[in-house]
Image (cartoon, rainbow, N blue to C red; front, top):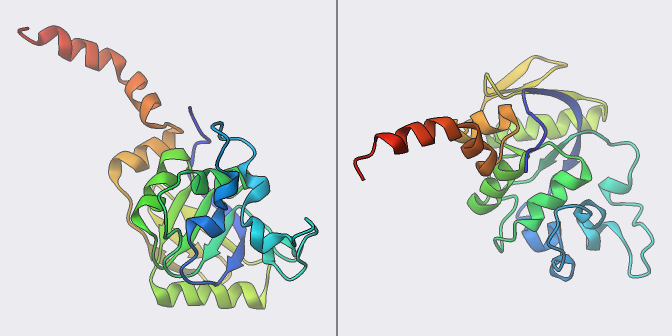
Length: 198
């Protein structure tokens, strides 16, 4: 299944300065029964967003119209816990195209890259700069440049580089998942197979 191509994303950001956000908080286990990838955004951070009677919690950031954007800025160790890929699905389905943190759990990071959400790991110092900038001005914009592997705070020009696997980078720029990538090089695979002696 192809996803949105990711090149340069310029957007305001939603701050979630909470450390050790695990996948059960991102998408509670009771919502994992569906096998299609649609609809999970409705339950992103469900127990933090809603009361027991399904009314929104006014003090949670996703319910605060002050903040908006396609970038989620999370605290250290974002996406820890179980390996459920539904957590990445929920982030994507809600409308986020990038998550910024000073550290990601490896499996969550991989799941994000597989479905078109870019995990941008920055230094703790730069993460703090971003949080403070958003606190001072919720309309603060970030630019995430995937080809150059940079994230920039546009108001000040402060910038950091981030790392990404070359294969995953290429897939995100082209909007490919792993199957799309293989289909794209089908002719090369067939040509290689034809040269094999067996």
